[in-house]
Image (cartoon, rainbow, N blue to C red; front, top):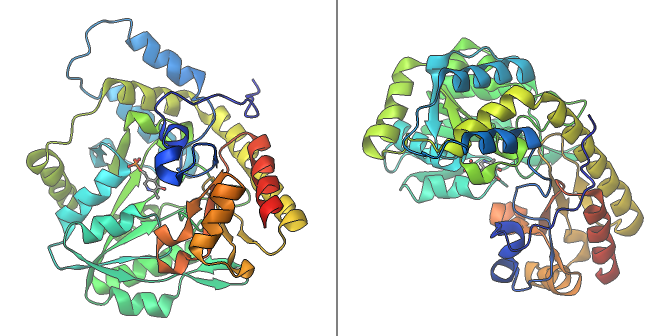
Amino acid sequence: MTYNFDEVVDRTNTSCIKWDARQGVFGNPEVLPLWVADMDFRSPQFVIDAIAQRLTHPVLGYTLRPDSYFEAIIGWVKRRNGWSIERDWIAHCPGVVPGLNVAVLAYTNPGDRIVIQTPVYPPFFDAVNHNGRTLVENPLTVADGRFVIDFDDLDQKLAGAKAIILSNPHNPVGRVFDEEELRRIGELCLKHGVTIISDEIHSDIILPPHRHLHIANLDERFAAASVTFMAPSKTFNLAGLSTAYAVIPNAERRARYLHVLEQQLHLGMGNIAGIVGLEAAYRHGDEWLDQLVTYIKGNADLLEELLKAMLPKVTLYKPEGTYLAWMDFSAYGLDDDALDRKLIHEAQVGLNSGSTFGTNGRGFRRINLACPRAYVKEAVERMARVL
Ligand SMILES: Cc1ncc(COP(=O)(O)O)c(C=O)c1O
């Protein structure tokens, strides 16, 4: 069947953050909101149906994750990106961000140095700073129009560090790191005895011709040094269900994670809708996802075309993965406040401000392309009118 991602679904008055928090976030309730990373598409009917079916039983008590849940994860990870994982390796977390924090607590001590690759998803800063660890930045650099890793700097920054938090695919710059890059990261982490905390929540949204590689699947030594976080939340628009998980192949490393998650914080319990929703998504979602990725690629192509035609001074970093695109507005010579006034209050477009991703994000804006194509067109037209 063909899914209709052009459909406009009215999300207002559902308490959704993207639309219903506009006044608080932007100071303008009328912006076209293309910010927080969830999708404006309906969640797939096969997920809704599975949850509805479970709700026909009226008791919603404490619930185990059944064998079929683990089988669904194992099947999905193997089918989509070729990684054979074992049931024992799978641990839980209410969300990837809580999981990152559990990993920080499990593998590092207060004061320890943790490396992140900026500009990057803001909760990476918090996972380090709010747990009393020391933030070390390995800023990404631009070469040939794409963001790349400065490996000399990474080598220096990893010396004396305890962990690195990777975003692969990378939010916000949209890179899908290739095999050579991942092997170099892995070897440097082994050289310096650094734990790899790999956030791969976007690993299902890979735009052709790119291909996602799990760093832990490239080398058994990387697997032993790593914890990989994934979820169906971005992929199937289920962020409200809190359904993330960690894959930790090394038994000793897993035990440390589980100790913090289950004994210290008591966060191991799932929720019924999330357990059922994950399983339905991973069992029935291949075709839906393939069509989604094609649609998002179409939105990225359209954004590129419209920017070239209407806002040629914006430099677009077209995503290789994720449904997010990173745009550099600095050629307009406006400071962030002036650019916000233009975009939020004159154009009425709600994007993520680049500076929230680190100081090297200043002058950039992140746009969310997981929306009907008409929104992308509308957003660029509105911005072009005021710039
Ligand atoms: C890189 C990255 N990690 C984690 C998350 C959120 O994860 P969760 O909602 O499972 O905590 C996001 C959401 O945008 C993200 O982009």
